[in-house]
Length: 135
Image (cartoon, rainbow, N blue to C red; front, side, top):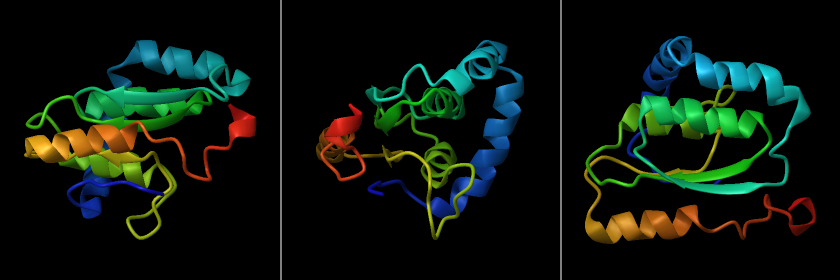
């Protein structure tokens, strides 16, 4: 899986905060509960460019739970929470050595050149994991 974040060792901290945030986001949790088994977004590819925060991590994981293929970047070079980005890349069942989450291209303090590189990477669904047959 392709990604670029500051430090995957921050994923455990990020995962704990995601679990706390889920308790404070009943709307997204209700959507997950109702639609996860139905996979209404299966085959849909979503590129997100939004502040890479813990709350955004809950949104990203909701989109993937509903079947979407997701790639993400931040919309602001200063707003990324690096522990959130790391947790999304590692995923619920991965480890920093074997990430199983979502490709994220974001870290706090990106240069303008890095920002545009991250945006381009988030838009690229050309890898083998993005089969044309599934789209």
